[in-house]
Structures are given as structure tokens and as C-alpha cells.
Length: 236
Ligand code: 1GP
Image (cartoon, rainbow, N blue to C red):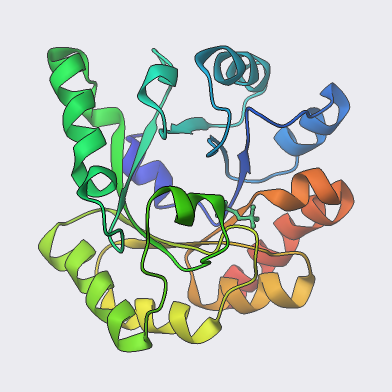
């Protein structure tokens, strides 16, 4: 199945950070949890070594595993898929297209485009490391979100629109606004999901729910989130 088709089936994914320790037992629970995929990615301290090590560990399970690229020196050759964020609400064009241009200029003909999916990212938590790193304007209204969703989907034709609240639970109005703006793209939501109510609320509007921190803070709840999201998706 092509990467885009695969992504079209994802309801729930775990995002694992190469820079955070995870025991073998915890990783086994995550990879056999019936989540739809593992995304390897993070913001701080990402190196080729820690990324490759985590990938090797995940690869021993059957779960699909893709890399969300944040640092191009850490790109995993031979990974089954690559998610490439372009931050739409950044004030620094480097994070929208500059880093991408550099990577494409470096790797040129070697890039397996059929395994690459672009993500239109809107980062909405001003306290998140990724928000500070990428100089985002997080002070957005629902009208702004609708416009960004249309820009990403109808103008740039990015297959994924990602609302990123990394570390904090977001506002449902923003997710609903993004939903209104999208026609084709898949709507990803990530940020601060810790409870069943939160998972169900976001899964009602987003296509794919990304769980990150909870893996490291409360593994039991993280594992439970798979069913919370999937059962909500089935009811839609
Ligand atoms: C982070 O969107 C993901 O990039 C998930 O967010 O870590 O807050 O769950 P949390």
C-alpha cells in the first residue's frame, strides 16, 4: 500500500521521541497495542544515532513506522515513510520551506518521493519547544485556522494538516475550524491528550490522533488511548 493510502487509514498513532528513554517492555506494549503506526520524531537532542537506535528497535515489530523529519542529519535511509512538516504559522521561512530546500538540494535524486508525505503544520501552544524554535505566531483565531487549512489543502495540496498543541491540550474550536477548511487533507491532532474525554473529543473532529508525552508519563493510559480513539472513530 502506498504511504498516502496507509496514512488515510490511521486513526491513532504514537509519536516516539528518540531523545527519551523507553524500556523494551514499554516499547513492546506500544508496538503491539493495535495503534495504526509509530512516528519517530522529536524537537530536542535529535541525532542520527538515537533516531537510528529507536528505529531498529521498532523495526522488530510489525507495526508501520515512519520518520517525521526535523533534523536532516538524522534522516533514516530505508525508512518506510517520511513525514515532512512545513510550519504554516512560522514567522521564519526556514521552517516553512528553507530547511526543505536545503535537504532537497543535498539529497536530490536520492529522495524516494513515493514514500514522502508533506504536513501543513499549525503550532498553537506558545510554550512548546517547537513553537519557540520555529518562531510561530500562535495567537490565531478560528478564522485564521480555516484560512490555514485552506492554504494547506486547496492551494498547496498537502495531504496532512496537523494541529500541533504539543504538551498541552488544545481548543476544540480550533480543530472544528480546521475541519471546516479542509476538503481532502487528513486532519491530524496532537497535544496533551491524557484522558478518555479528551481523546474522544478530539477524535470526533480529527481524523488521526497523535499521542506523544503520555507514553512517557503514564503508559497504561497511553495504551488505553488506542481504544478510546478507535471506538470514537467507529461511532462517527
Ligand atoms: C507531539 O503532537 C504530538 O508532536 C503529541 O503531543 O506529546 O502532547 O501528546 P503530546
